[in-house]
Amino acid sequence: MSEELKLESLAVQLFEINAVKFGEYKSKSGITTPVYLDLRVIVSYPDVMQIISRLIRDHALEGSKCDHLCGVPYTALPIATLLSVEAKIPMLMRRKEAKAYGTKKMIEGHYKAGQKCLIIEDVVTSGSSVLETVKDLRREGLVAQEAIIILDREQGGRENLAANDVSVKSLFTMTNLINILLKNKKIDNNMALKVLDYLRNTKAPTSEKPEDRTQLTFEKRAELATNEIAKQLFDVMATKKTNLCVSVDLTTTTCILDLLEKVGEHVCLVKTHADIIEDFSTDFITRLKSLAKRFNFLILEDRKYADIGNTVSLQYAKGLHKVSEWADCVTAHSLPGEGILKAINGATNGVRKGVFLLAEMSSEGNLITPEYTDKTVSMASNFPSLICGFVSQNKNTFNQPGLIQLTPGVQLESTKDDLGQVYNTPEKVMLEKGADVVVVGRGILSAKNPAAEALVYKEALWKNYLKRVSGKMEL
Image 1 (cartoon, rainbow, N blue to C red):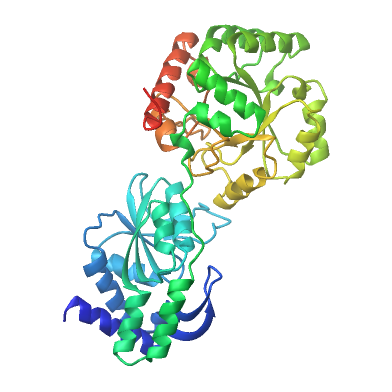
Image 2 (cartoon, rainbow, N blue to C red; image 1 turned 120 degrees about the horizontal axis):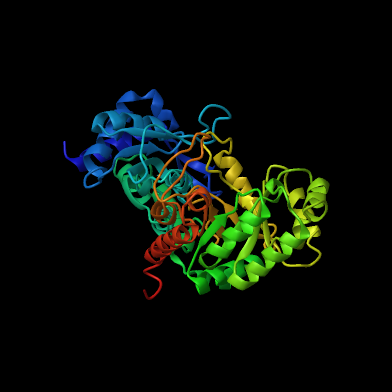
């Protein structure tokens, strides 16, 4: 039997098992439709599932080179499973929500960053379900640029996916399906005309591809920043040609100031931990701010605030350290909710300040889940003048070009220490993980010549930054 006849036979079977319904239905995208494809019923018809999987294998898989398959949950999962067995291609499984225990992963299975994953879906209207899966796959470093679907409703989903770099192959279009059913006298001419007229006049909301922040220069992103500290930091990086942040995890003021005299010219940001400094004093802050002005770098106090609003307000503005008086920006957890940001914002006394929210961490086994990360990014949108960016390990965490990705855990060679800190190379952290400002601590602090080592990091990071934006600027 020819492929065309196989598809025609399948269309008739889908109608006969009530997988194709006519009436008045509402799709996931909110569109009311006179025709609805409900493929959830096919799990009761193994012959139909096998026909679909083999048609996808023989027709749609042709020319697709992939390392994995991933079915969009939940309807496409049985088809993806059968196809994995038929085509001998490993399968990955995407959860709709992360587990609250164990690995807490959204993507289950064995895979490596950079591998290609082909997405399997039943029906596409707007493409939103496919894009949700694409987002989670790309967050894991997988390449997700192709989708195979059973039915394209021809209402804009294919175009929305293309705008997000996802190409689509389908077994049927809605027009094709209706014409087959009409030919086989499963529907009458009036129903066919009603559906085809509906398709011409009803489209899903369009989705334009957002501009990739990692492809834009720091100069351009400074123009898009809504937080003054982010704008200033972008300008410093562009002017000094460095996106290196040194973490001064030292316990005496003399050691910190001595180090900054040596490396200040090579860094855009200095990250402090005031509460580990044994001889903290106002004189130290005066000298620190003087160095910041002389070498043109900003100061980040890595306090990681995580208490209720009132307590954080006091921690930020009062006590021995009086962080609000000297730090340009601070880090904070989103765990307590928006109250923590309201507290910091209220304690700035009108002076421009910035907050880096912890969206992800570099320590092995940390408890942050993808849902927590998404909610953190969402929370930041309510404080555009306060949030300067996120502490993050993944370029897909956010895509607002006016915000900064601050990424710790970097050394010239990938390693892991005894306490579970995972380190990435400058190339990996810039090109794969999307870092903007890169934090280096022990890699510089423990070097025999910190100044020379800082220069090595600075040049390696900047070289990869230029490589990243090479399509957007003159080298």
